[in-house]
Length: 79
View 1: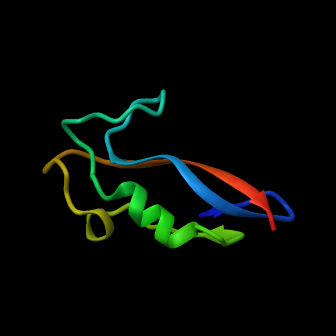
View 2: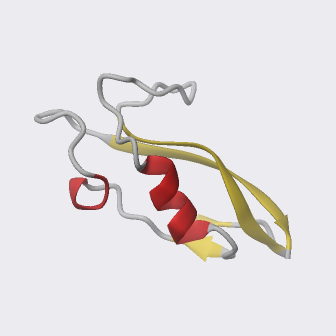
């Protein structure tokens, strides 16, 4: 769940990766769901809050048998 700052809405995704992104917000090309940005945009753009479950059912399984995580960074704008 992501909450935009007071008086703002989510505007655009600057980074999104479901798989094994690094701590520096870098995509691991060996384990990254290519639809990460579009899923986050669809769920969050223009909203003050949004929730996206980090799961294979939402993003597909980019690398079987490996524990995955979702990292997201977004810009907000004044509502």
